[in-house]
Length: 286
Image (cartoon, rainbow, N blue to C red; front, side):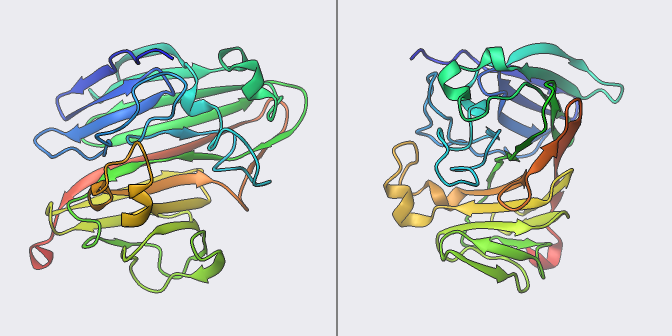
Protein backbone atom coordinates (compact mmCIF):
# COMPACT_ATOMS: atom_id res chain seq x y z
CA UNK A 1 0.00 0.00 0.00
CA UNK A 2 1.15 3.54 -0.75
CA UNK A 3 0.03 6.92 0.47
CA UNK A 4 -2.56 8.63 -1.71
CA UNK A 5 -1.45 11.65 -3.77
CA UNK A 6 -2.82 15.11 -3.11
CA UNK A 7 -6.31 15.62 -4.57
CA UNK A 8 -6.95 17.68 -7.67
CA UNK A 9 -8.29 21.13 -6.75
CA UNK A 10 -11.26 22.51 -8.66
CA UNK A 11 -11.93 26.21 -8.24
CA UNK A 12 -14.50 28.56 -9.71
CA UNK A 13 -15.79 31.98 -8.72
CA UNK A 14 -18.90 30.38 -7.22
CA UNK A 15 -17.36 27.48 -5.32
CA UNK A 16 -14.44 25.12 -4.87
CA UNK A 17 -13.77 21.47 -4.26
CA UNK A 18 -11.27 18.67 -4.67
CA UNK A 19 -11.26 15.15 -6.08
CA UNK A 20 -8.88 12.19 -6.02
CA UNK A 21 -8.14 10.06 -9.06
CA UNK A 22 -8.13 7.14 -6.62
CA UNK A 23 -11.76 6.08 -6.75
CA UNK A 24 -12.67 9.28 -8.66
CA UNK A 25 -13.49 10.28 -5.11
CA UNK A 26 -14.80 13.79 -4.37
CA UNK A 27 -13.30 14.83 -1.02
CA UNK A 28 -14.51 18.41 -0.61
CA UNK A 29 -16.92 21.03 -1.91
CA UNK A 30 -18.34 24.32 -0.68
CA UNK A 31 -20.01 27.25 -2.43
CA UNK A 32 -18.07 30.51 -2.13
CA UNK A 33 -18.47 31.97 1.35
CA UNK A 34 -20.18 28.86 2.76
CA UNK A 35 -19.13 26.17 5.23
CA UNK A 36 -17.94 22.81 3.82
CA UNK A 37 -20.76 20.61 2.61
CA UNK A 38 -18.99 17.27 2.27
CA UNK A 39 -17.91 15.50 5.46
CA UNK A 40 -14.60 13.68 5.86
CA UNK A 41 -13.64 11.51 8.81
CA UNK A 42 -10.62 12.68 10.79
CA UNK A 43 -9.49 9.03 10.74
CA UNK A 44 -10.06 8.34 7.04
CA UNK A 45 -7.52 5.97 5.53
CA UNK A 46 -5.04 7.67 3.22
CA UNK A 47 -3.51 4.74 1.41
CA UNK A 48 -4.20 2.61 -1.65
CA UNK A 49 -6.13 -0.60 -1.26
CA UNK A 50 -8.49 0.84 1.36
CA UNK A 51 -11.76 2.73 1.05
CA UNK A 52 -11.90 6.39 2.09
CA UNK A 53 -14.37 7.34 4.80
CA UNK A 54 -16.15 10.51 3.73
CA UNK A 55 -16.63 12.67 0.66
CA UNK A 56 -18.40 10.78 -2.12
CA UNK A 57 -17.24 7.19 -2.66
CA UNK A 58 -18.52 5.55 -5.85
CA UNK A 59 -20.28 2.24 -5.25
CA UNK A 60 -20.06 0.09 -8.41
CA UNK A 61 -20.75 -2.50 -9.75
CA UNK A 62 -22.53 -3.63 -6.59
CA UNK A 63 -23.74 -1.99 -3.38
CA UNK A 64 -22.81 -3.27 0.07
CA UNK A 65 -22.46 -7.07 -0.24
CA UNK A 66 -24.46 -7.05 -3.47
CA UNK A 67 -27.87 -8.54 -4.05
CA UNK A 68 -26.55 -12.03 -3.32
CA UNK A 69 -25.27 -10.86 0.06
CA UNK A 70 -21.73 -12.22 -0.37
CA UNK A 71 -19.98 -9.91 -2.84
CA UNK A 72 -16.52 -8.61 -1.95
CA UNK A 73 -15.15 -6.04 -1.53
CA UNK A 74 -18.08 -4.19 0.01
CA UNK A 75 -19.61 -1.63 -2.37
CA UNK A 76 -17.64 -2.97 -5.35
CA UNK A 77 -14.20 -2.26 -6.73
CA UNK A 78 -14.67 1.24 -8.16
CA UNK A 79 -13.94 3.12 -4.95
CA UNK A 80 -10.50 1.52 -4.51
CA UNK A 81 -9.45 1.54 -8.17
CA UNK A 82 -7.20 4.08 -9.87
CA UNK A 83 -9.34 6.05 -12.32
CA UNK A 84 -7.83 7.91 -15.26
CA UNK A 85 -8.12 11.69 -15.50
CA UNK A 86 -9.21 12.43 -19.07
CA UNK A 87 -10.31 16.07 -18.96
CA UNK A 88 -10.48 19.09 -16.70
CA UNK A 89 -11.33 22.75 -17.22
CA UNK A 90 -14.25 25.16 -17.03
CA UNK A 91 -17.67 24.75 -18.59
CA UNK A 92 -19.70 27.43 -20.37
CA UNK A 93 -21.06 28.67 -17.02
CA UNK A 94 -17.64 29.17 -15.46
CA UNK A 95 -17.89 26.07 -13.27
CA UNK A 96 -14.76 23.97 -12.77
CA UNK A 97 -14.96 20.30 -13.73
CA UNK A 98 -12.91 17.15 -14.01
CA UNK A 99 -13.70 13.84 -15.73
CA UNK A 100 -12.29 10.41 -14.96
CA UNK A 101 -12.76 7.02 -16.60
CA UNK A 102 -12.53 3.45 -15.36
CA UNK A 103 -12.24 0.36 -17.55
CA UNK A 104 -11.60 -3.31 -16.75
CA UNK A 105 -7.86 -2.92 -17.31
CA UNK A 106 -7.78 -0.43 -14.41
CA UNK A 107 -9.11 -3.05 -11.97
CA UNK A 108 -7.11 -5.86 -10.39
CA UNK A 109 -7.98 -9.16 -12.02
CA UNK A 110 -8.94 -10.87 -8.76
CA UNK A 111 -11.42 -8.08 -7.97
CA UNK A 112 -13.11 -8.42 -11.35
CA UNK A 113 -13.91 -12.11 -10.95
CA UNK A 114 -17.37 -11.33 -9.55
CA UNK A 115 -18.14 -8.95 -12.43
CA UNK A 116 -16.52 -10.39 -15.58
CA UNK A 117 -18.10 -7.88 -17.97
CA UNK A 118 -16.75 -5.26 -20.35
CA UNK A 119 -17.65 -1.72 -19.35
CA UNK A 120 -16.53 1.88 -19.33
CA UNK A 121 -17.41 4.13 -16.38
CA UNK A 122 -17.08 7.90 -16.56
CA UNK A 123 -17.35 10.24 -13.58
CA UNK A 124 -17.73 13.99 -14.04
CA UNK A 125 -17.49 16.34 -11.06
CA UNK A 126 -18.65 19.91 -11.62
CA UNK A 127 -17.98 22.54 -8.96
CA UNK A 128 -19.62 25.93 -8.59
CA UNK A 129 -22.58 27.27 -6.65
CA UNK A 130 -23.81 23.68 -6.84
CA UNK A 131 -22.00 20.37 -6.82
CA UNK A 132 -22.91 17.98 -9.61
CA UNK A 133 -21.63 14.42 -9.74
CA UNK A 134 -22.50 12.40 -12.81
CA UNK A 135 -21.62 8.72 -13.34
CA UNK A 136 -22.15 7.14 -16.76
CA UNK A 137 -21.62 3.42 -17.26
CA UNK A 138 -21.52 1.94 -20.76
CA UNK A 139 -21.73 -1.75 -21.59
CA UNK A 140 -18.85 -2.13 -24.06
CA UNK A 141 -19.22 -5.91 -24.31
CA UNK A 142 -21.52 -8.20 -26.25
CA UNK A 143 -23.66 -9.53 -23.39
CA UNK A 144 -26.30 -7.90 -21.17
CA UNK A 145 -25.36 -7.35 -17.53
CA UNK A 146 -26.95 -6.00 -14.37
CA UNK A 147 -25.24 -3.66 -11.93
CA UNK A 148 -25.86 -1.68 -8.75
CA UNK A 149 -24.49 1.81 -8.22
CA UNK A 150 -24.56 4.64 -5.70
CA UNK A 151 -23.01 8.04 -5.12
CA UNK A 152 -22.34 7.46 -1.42
CA UNK A 153 -22.49 11.12 -0.36
CA UNK A 154 -21.41 12.10 3.17
CA UNK A 155 -22.95 15.44 4.14
CA UNK A 156 -21.54 17.65 6.89
CA UNK A 157 -24.22 18.61 9.42
CA UNK A 158 -24.14 20.54 12.69
CA UNK A 159 -25.77 17.82 14.80
CA UNK A 160 -27.33 14.73 13.24
CA UNK A 161 -29.73 14.46 16.18
CA UNK A 162 -31.28 17.81 15.28
CA UNK A 163 -31.55 17.67 11.49
CA UNK A 164 -34.67 16.66 9.59
CA UNK A 165 -34.96 15.17 6.10
CA UNK A 166 -38.03 16.04 4.04
CA UNK A 167 -39.12 14.64 0.70
CA UNK A 168 -39.29 10.96 1.66
CA UNK A 169 -42.80 10.90 3.18
CA UNK A 170 -44.89 8.08 1.75
CA UNK A 171 -41.91 6.24 0.28
CA UNK A 172 -41.49 2.54 0.90
CA UNK A 173 -38.11 1.60 2.32
CA UNK A 174 -36.13 -1.34 3.59
CA UNK A 175 -34.83 -0.76 7.10
CA UNK A 176 -31.50 -2.61 7.08
CA UNK A 177 -31.16 -2.25 10.87
CA UNK A 178 -34.57 -3.75 11.70
CA UNK A 179 -34.44 -5.93 8.56
CA UNK A 180 -38.00 -5.14 7.54
CA UNK A 181 -39.95 -3.21 4.94
CA UNK A 182 -41.57 0.03 6.11
CA UNK A 183 -43.22 3.22 4.82
CA UNK A 184 -41.88 6.65 5.78
CA UNK A 185 -44.32 8.86 7.66
CA UNK A 186 -43.53 12.59 7.67
CA UNK A 187 -39.99 13.95 7.86
CA UNK A 188 -37.13 11.62 8.72
CA UNK A 189 -35.17 12.34 11.90
CA UNK A 190 -32.12 10.50 13.22
CA UNK A 191 -32.76 8.91 16.61
CA UNK A 192 -30.50 5.85 16.42
CA UNK A 193 -28.51 3.78 13.93
CA UNK A 194 -30.05 4.47 10.54
CA UNK A 195 -29.53 2.45 7.37
CA UNK A 196 -32.50 2.72 5.03
CA UNK A 197 -32.94 2.14 1.29
CA UNK A 198 -35.92 4.10 -0.05
CA UNK A 199 -37.73 3.43 -3.32
CA UNK A 200 -37.54 7.07 -4.23
CA UNK A 201 -36.74 9.21 -7.27
CA UNK A 202 -37.26 12.74 -5.98
CA UNK A 203 -35.51 15.54 -4.18
CA UNK A 204 -34.75 15.57 -0.46
CA UNK A 205 -34.00 18.52 1.79
CA UNK A 206 -31.80 18.28 4.87
CA UNK A 207 -32.75 21.06 7.29
CA UNK A 208 -29.89 21.87 9.66
CA UNK A 209 -30.75 24.35 12.46
CA UNK A 210 -27.22 24.25 13.91
CA UNK A 211 -25.43 25.32 10.72
CA UNK A 212 -28.49 27.38 9.76
CA UNK A 213 -28.81 25.98 6.27
CA UNK A 214 -30.78 23.60 4.11
CA UNK A 215 -28.97 21.11 1.87
CA UNK A 216 -31.05 20.36 -1.22
CA UNK A 217 -30.18 17.01 -2.78
CA UNK A 218 -31.69 16.24 -6.18
CA UNK A 219 -30.88 13.44 -8.58
CA UNK A 220 -31.36 11.95 -12.02
CA UNK A 221 -31.45 8.35 -13.24
CA UNK A 222 -31.87 7.02 -9.70
CA UNK A 223 -34.61 4.81 -8.26
CA UNK A 224 -33.09 4.48 -4.77
CA UNK A 225 -32.25 6.97 -2.03
CA UNK A 226 -30.10 5.65 0.81
CA UNK A 227 -29.88 7.37 4.20
CA UNK A 228 -27.20 6.27 6.67
CA UNK A 229 -25.82 7.26 10.06
CA UNK A 230 -23.98 4.70 12.25
CA UNK A 231 -24.92 6.34 15.60
CA UNK A 232 -22.76 5.97 18.70
CA UNK A 233 -22.27 2.23 19.25
CA UNK A 234 -21.39 1.35 15.67
CA UNK A 235 -19.09 4.35 15.26
CA UNK A 236 -16.99 3.18 18.22
CA UNK A 237 -16.27 -0.08 16.41
CA UNK A 238 -15.09 1.56 13.17
CA UNK A 239 -11.35 2.19 12.94
CA UNK A 240 -11.73 4.95 10.35
CA UNK A 241 -14.42 6.83 12.27
CA UNK A 242 -13.80 8.88 15.43
CA UNK A 243 -16.15 7.90 18.25
CA UNK A 244 -18.26 11.07 18.19
CA UNK A 245 -18.12 11.94 14.48
CA UNK A 246 -21.53 10.41 13.81
CA UNK A 247 -22.93 13.64 15.22
CA UNK A 248 -21.56 15.72 12.33
CA UNK A 249 -22.46 13.59 9.30
CA UNK A 250 -25.36 12.14 7.38
CA UNK A 251 -25.21 10.08 4.20
CA UNK A 252 -27.84 10.82 1.56
CA UNK A 253 -27.08 8.75 -1.50
CA UNK A 254 -28.47 8.59 -5.03
CA UNK A 255 -28.45 4.99 -6.17
CA UNK A 256 -29.89 2.05 -8.02
CA UNK A 257 -29.55 -0.76 -5.49
CA UNK A 258 -31.15 -3.89 -4.05
CA UNK A 259 -34.50 -4.20 -5.85
CA UNK A 260 -33.62 -1.52 -8.42
CA UNK A 261 -30.50 -2.62 -10.34
CA UNK A 262 -29.65 -1.26 -13.76
CA UNK A 263 -29.80 -3.68 -16.70
CA UNK A 264 -27.63 -2.74 -19.67
CA UNK A 265 -27.70 -4.48 -23.02
CA UNK A 266 -24.62 -4.47 -25.24
CA UNK A 267 -23.80 -0.91 -26.28
CA UNK A 268 -26.23 0.72 -23.85
CA UNK A 269 -25.29 3.41 -21.33
CA UNK A 270 -26.86 4.65 -18.13
CA UNK A 271 -26.24 7.91 -16.27
CA UNK A 272 -26.94 8.62 -12.61
CA UNK A 273 -26.40 12.14 -11.26
CA UNK A 274 -26.67 13.89 -7.91
CA UNK A 275 -26.82 17.67 -7.45
CA UNK A 276 -26.35 19.40 -4.09
CA UNK A 277 -27.25 23.03 -3.39
CA UNK A 278 -27.15 25.11 -0.21
CA UNK A 279 -29.91 27.44 0.93
CA UNK A 280 -30.24 29.64 3.99
CA UNK A 281 -32.45 28.34 6.75
CA UNK A 282 -35.81 30.13 6.76
CA UNK A 283 -36.02 32.60 9.64
CA UNK A 284 -38.86 30.69 11.31
CA UNK A 285 -36.69 27.54 11.47
CA UNK A 286 -33.55 29.22 12.81
